[in-house]
Each structure stands twice: as C-alpha cells, then as structure tokens.
Image (cartoon, rainbow, N blue to C red; front, side, top):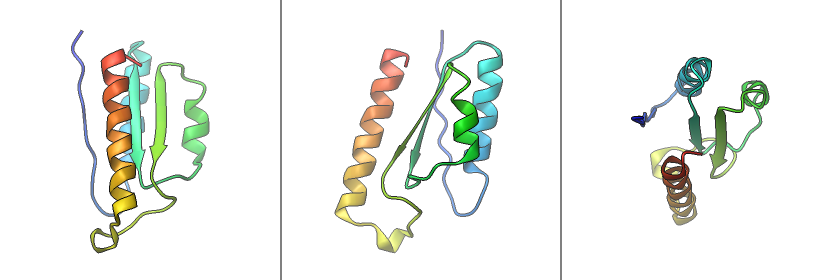
Length: 95
C-alpha cells in the first residue's frame, strides 16, 4: 500500500479543515491517517469528534497559539523538530 504526505501551511483558516476532510474520507475507506499539528496546542471540537474514528491519529506540537515568522525562537524550532520526528516515526510504523 502506498502512503501519502500532505503539508498545509499559510496564514488564516482552512489548513486543519482540509486535513480533517481528507482524514474522514480515508477513514471511510478504512485507511489510517496521521495528522501532526504544529503551533496549535489547543483543543478543538473537531479533535474531540475524531477520537471516535480509530483510523485517525492527531497529535499537536509546539506552543499554544500561532506565531509569525519573525517570532520564531530556538524552542519553537526544537518543538518542530520533535514533531517531525514523531510524524516520521508514525509513518514508518503505520500508526
């Protein structure tokens, strides 16, 4: 089975919604999806709903809230590196 990685970036809304939409579509075909969110750290209703889909794993990394490019610190970079490592691990293990 072939896996895919999609990355959503940018200002404003829509990134989480796009990822969740594809995750739900994949779950409907009994496919596993991993969503790693960076710079979120907040609980959303959508995340609670996804707990009912065992095919979907969602994890958050970094500080609560969003930052601008000129606000990035070494700690933010460390959180991102840890998140990417976890995402890679999840992809390789299939969970």
